[in-house]
Every structure is written in C-alpha cells, then in structure tokens.
Image (cartoon, rainbow, N blue to C red; front, side):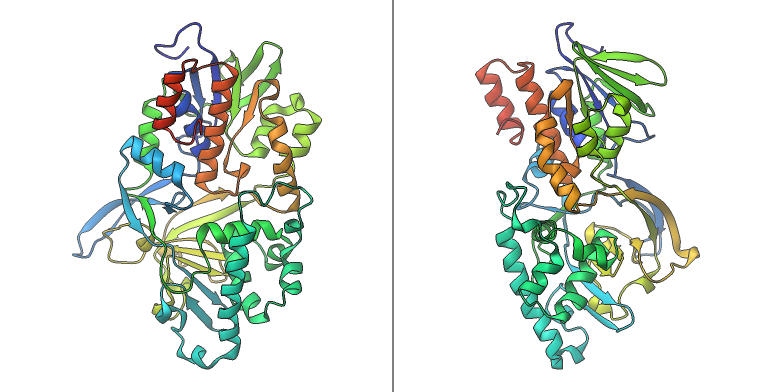
Length: 448
C-alpha cells in the first residue's frame, strides 16, 4: 500500500510511465492508492532527455539535456499539456515548427520557414510545377482544416476513411504537390514508404497535418518546448506518486470478479482496477490468455513498428542549401530534426536527431542512438479506435496512450486524464461537489 494511503481507498495499478500513465497516476494520487509500474530503467516512456557535452559559441564545453522524444507543442493543439506544465511550474521556451522537404535524385529542396525558404532555390520562381504545388498545398490545407473536425470520425463508415491516394486523384491534385510536397513530408514524418502513405486513411493525414499546421508556407505558428529538457517535468510528477517502481516489468494481468491481479517478477498483487498505459500490443501481451476476443481484435489491430533514432552532428543529411534548413527536415522515408531550432541550446554546432533517410551518417559524428516505436494509423487501426470506448472499464481495465488518439503527447495526456476521470466516477473518489469543482480548476481536462 502506498505511504499515507487509507485502507478504504481503491487500489489502482498504472502500467507504464509515459505521458498517459503519468497523467493518470498524477490525477489519482491522493484520491486512490496508486502504484505506478515501469518496466525500463527510466520513467517517462518516449519522453527521453539525453545529456551531451559539446563546444558552445565560445568554444568551451557545455553540457545540455537534449529532448529526443518530446519536442514541441502549441496553445491550439496542446491545451491540457500547457495546463499541466503551468500547474507543475515547468518553464517553457520558444520553439520552431518549420518544415523542409528534400527529394534525393531531383535536387529539389524547399522549406516553410518564410518565403525565402520556400524559394531558396531561385530556379523555382520560374517553375510552373512548383507554383502549382504551392497552390495545391493551400487547397489541401483548407481541406484538412475542414476534414479534421473533432466530430469527423464519429462514423466508422465515414468516407474520410478512404485511402489518401483516392482523394488526391478525385480532387485532381497535381503530381508536383504529391511528389515534391505531401508524400515526402508524410513519408518522412511517419517513417514509412510512400506506398503506405498513399494507402493511409484520408482522415489520418488530415488530422496529422492540421495538428502540426504543416502546410503553412511562410510565417510561423507559436510553438513551445520544455526549457532544459522534459526530464524535470517527469521527475516532478513521479515525485508526487507514493509508490512508483522502476525496472519492474508487469508480466501478466488477470481479472476476476473482485478486481485484478498484477504479476511481476517479485510478487503477485491485487488491485481494484488497472490502467494499461502502454502500447496496445504491450497491453495485449500483458493480458495474454485473459484477453477477450474483443480485446484481441481491437488491441491487435494497431501496429507499433520500431524506428532507429540517431543523435549526431552530421549536417550532410540536411538540404544542401542552408536556406532550406528547418526544424523538421523531411525526405521520403527519413526525418532529420534540427534540435537547435526545436529547443534552446548553447552549442555552436548543429545537433540533429535523424530517423531513417537515404544518406549514411558519418560514424564519428554519432553521439548516441536508440529505438522508438510509434503507432501506425492505417485503416485497421482507425477502425479499432472506434471499438476502443466499448472496452474501457470492462473487467476493471482501462487503456490509455497516445495511440488512443492521433499519436501526439497531448493525445496520451488526454487518454490518461479520461482514464482517471472514469475511475473517479466508478469508485466515487471525489464525492463532494466542492471538491469536484476544485479538481476541475486544477486540472481542466479531468472532469470537463
């Protein structure tokens, strides 16, 4: 039992310490007896801060924490994250959300930083193909804004689930827009072949591009990042959780009429409920033979392919034209994040986090590498998301993660908040109206 917990409190296990698990545990702490299980050696999931030491602008060695998993957020798309950071007193810094596209083999490169970045290759001023691409980008951006409404996915037979390729052909988008803009962008950001981008549901592309305001050509959205790396905010949340266990992988979760049994290498413990705040495939593996047919069909439909991330200083992976450099530099199947633009760094030399790409990174320029796994929102995954609400709360089990939404940190936070809200209601954890009002003011997303 957590320190200070009442013997009458509901016992809740939270499996996974990514943003979803942290949100659920943080919200429920003090209302229920919470145990947070993390199987790896660090809390935070894919919110990863790496320490590096490189020369700063004066030539002196400077050590800094680099965020390779948590990068940018804005007021429009991340209201709950910003509210949480305000509550925790987490300092924010200005960031940049610009994009560039390079197409190896053609020499084409352009960026969204400003008009100079769009036309960093002056020959493009005389290219009718490029001007048509810009016009189509504006047209597609308007379509995305309309298609990505919050209620646009309420019907599993919605025509927005048609393949992106069909929509592009139906609306007669130019080959220049497809090949020199949209497909390299999405292929790079998603880390998948162009063929998979074309077969993805239109809704997935519309929501993703609308979230990042990707097709803004010239001008910038107001983006923020966590000053000094995301590690302090993870530590701040974990410090408030009475029973948070590192290096404690959950091997199995079994449910019965009385609650759940959580099995680790050390022991078997009983809880009243569990929040599986991990990837869908991990949740299914933990349930094992205890999973229902509905859980197997839903959780098993969402794939999480692994992608290698390399932290380095090799700028040869960026566009040859310096004016085309951006915060997020895309090519078919590859993404290169220029960390100097996504977070304030004292380093004089450019620091990059690369995910795939067509050019090899010089080994002597590599500072570190790690694997990341992101959900693939293909048609099967999107249809599985429609079925997920019916599983929430069944057999004392809730699911949370960025995969419950569109894969962003805000989605993970919202999923954790929704699980916490459901548990508050299920166990009547905040019985008095005055306390509910206070909780709503402290965490806007919990009881809204």
